[in-house]
Image 1 (cartoon, one colour):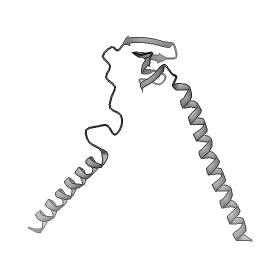
Image 2 (spheres, rainbow, N blue to C red):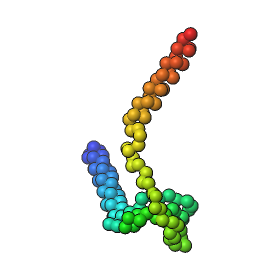
Image 3 (cartoon, helix red, strand yellow):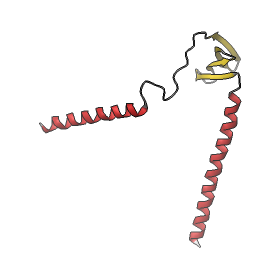
Image 4 (cartoon, rainbow, N blue to C red):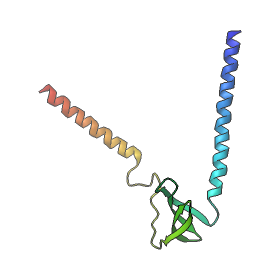
Length: 119
């Protein structure tokens, strides 16, 4: 009887986690879809205060810097020479290469310390 109750509680817990996961996914998709249009793309966004942001947006091929605040939205400037930053993974070094380098440097430092102690 105790095992049956335990299995029931475990099933309910798994069901709640499963439903929470898919609900979050569904809400995330609907929120993400509202931010991107066919001719309007938010390229970058950064907070500069509690309720204020700077956004770089592309509207029909024109790139603009916008300021957003509770008072409204203002176009600060049009960025004619805007260069898009590299996407994640497009950098000069991959994460794996950087991790390998750090591990090699760490091992070399460890061996140097060990050799210094042995002398």
